[in-house]
Image (tube, rainbow, N blue to C red):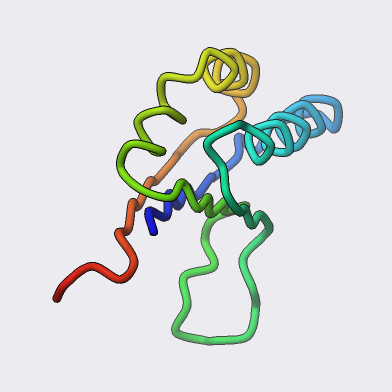
Length: 102
C-alpha cells in the first residue's frame, strides 16, 4: 500500500470563497482515478503529543509507486493544483509504503 499524506497550513487571509475553492479541490483530488481510498480532515484534538499545528490533512491510498506516479502525472491533478495552489502558506508531504519490509 502506498499512502500519500499531505498536511496543509492554509493562508490566514483566505476568504470564505477561497477556502471553499480549496475544499472543493481536495474533494476532486479524492476522486482521481489513481486513488483507491482517501481520508481528509482537520487535526484531531485528543492526543497532547500529536502535532495539531496544520489546518488540514489528506491521506490517499494510491496502491503502489506506479499508482503514485500516475496520480502525479494525471492532467486532472495538475489542473486541481493550479486551482488551489495559492491556498496554503506551507505544505508537507509524507509518502509511506505500508507493509514494506522493516
